[in-house]
Length: 341
Length: 247
Image (tube, rainbow over all chains, first blue to last red):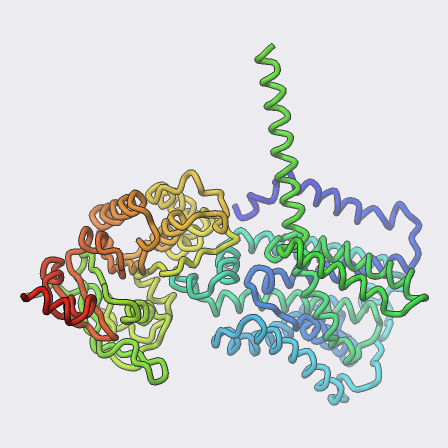
C-alpha cells in the first residue's frame, strides 16, 4: 500500500517527463556535448534527490555528498584496475563502502544531536579529509589520474565510446531514486524524518528513535551517492582525488533546498532547471566574463530564498492549488448560471 | 497494602550549572488519577517534566514508571513503555498536516496496515475532523493544543504529562479541553499529570495536587487541603498574605 499515492493525477506530469527524457536522444540527433550535459543534469538530479532524504526530510544539512560519491568512484575504479572486477559489481560495493563510512560518521554525530550549522561543518570537513587522504594514499589514489582500462567488452568494463548508454543508466537510477524517495516519504520512516526535521525533542517523546531514523536516512543517501560515484568514474574514465569536490557537495545541497525540502520531485526539478541553465550560462557568458554565470546562479538563489523559501516545489504546489480552486469556481459559477436561468 | 503507583519519583535533582532547578523532589502518581503540578513561575515544573520524560538527565534520584526504573532512559523508550507528553510552548510540526502529525505518534504502536485506523480514531476523539488536512502553521493556539494532545494520544499512552495545556485558551475552549481530559481519564483510563497555571482547570480536574516552589516540593494533597495550606499561600502571595489571613 506504500505506493498508493503514486498514481496521483499530478504524477502524469512525471511520466510525461520520463517519456520525454527517454525520447530526446532518439528523436534529435544530439551531439556528444549535449549528451554529456544531459547526463550531468541527471547525475545532479539523482544526487539532489538522494540528498532530499537526509537533508530535505530529516533536516540535516549534509554537505558530504562528494565524499560518498568519491568513495564510490575509487572503490569501483580500484576494483576494475587491480582485479578486473566489473563496475556493475563495483558500484554496489562502492555504495556499501560509502554507507560504512557514513555510519561511522553518523553514529556519534546523531548520538550527540549535532544539527544545523554544526552538522553542515562536520560533514563538509569529511570531503576535505577524504581528498587529502586519497591524495597521499598512492596505492589507490595519489596526485596523478589512474585510468580505467577499456577491456575487451564495453559492457563488462562500462567504458563506452559515446555518452548514450550512460545517459540511460542515469535515467534508470533517477527513476529508482525517485521511487525510493516516494516509498520513504509515505512510510513510517518518512513521517518520522519529516517530523524530526521540525522538532527533534517533540518527536522523541512520541516514541521515535531519532538516532536510528537518521542513520537509516544517511545510509540510503550515502549508498546512492556511492553507486552513482561508480558510474561517475566510468564516465570520466579515470579516478582522481579531485572527485572529492567541496563545491559539488555544496551545489547538491543548494539544489535540494531550492527544489523544496521534503518534496519528492522538487530537487530533481531544480537540478534539471538550474544545472542546464548553469551550463547554458557558462557556454554563452563564459567567453565574455569567466565566472559571471555563478553570479546569475547566486541571484536566482537569493530570489528563491527571499520569495519562496520552501522551494520551487512549494511554488508549483501552490500554483496547482490555485488553478484547482479557479476551475472549481468556474464550474460552480456556470452551474449557478444554469440554475438562475 | 497500597497499590503500586504508576509513577514514583524519588529525590530527583536537576542542576543547570550552579542553579538547582529541581531539588530532591519526591512524589507519586496513582494509576487512574489526574494529578496537578503547580507552582510560581520558575519553580521547576517544566524541568521536572523534562527529567521524567527523558529529555534531561537528572543528577540524582530515581524515576519508576509501571514498576520499571526509567531513570536515564531515552525519551523514545519511555514513550514505548507508555508515557508521552505535550509541551508548554506548542511545538507543532509546522509544515505537516494535522493528520500526518497524528500519524507520527500512531506509528509508535501500529504498523502500515492498521495505523490509519488509529489516526481516524484519535482525530475523531480530539474533534479534529474539520481541520485534518490543514497545515499546522495555519492553526490557532487552541487547535495546536488539541493537535499536541492528539499526537501524544496516538502513541496509546497509559500516562500523559500535559505541560500548561490550558494556557492561552479562552473560557469556552478551556471548558471543552477539560471535558476532553476528563473523558480520556474515565473512558480510556489514562493517568494524567498536568502542569497548570490556570487554577480553574487545576481545581476542576485534579484529585491530587503537588506544589513546587524554587525546585522543592512544599506541599501535596487534595485541592481543598492545598488551597488552605499556609506554605502554598506564602509561595504564591508572600508572607503578608498569610499574616492578613490569620488576623
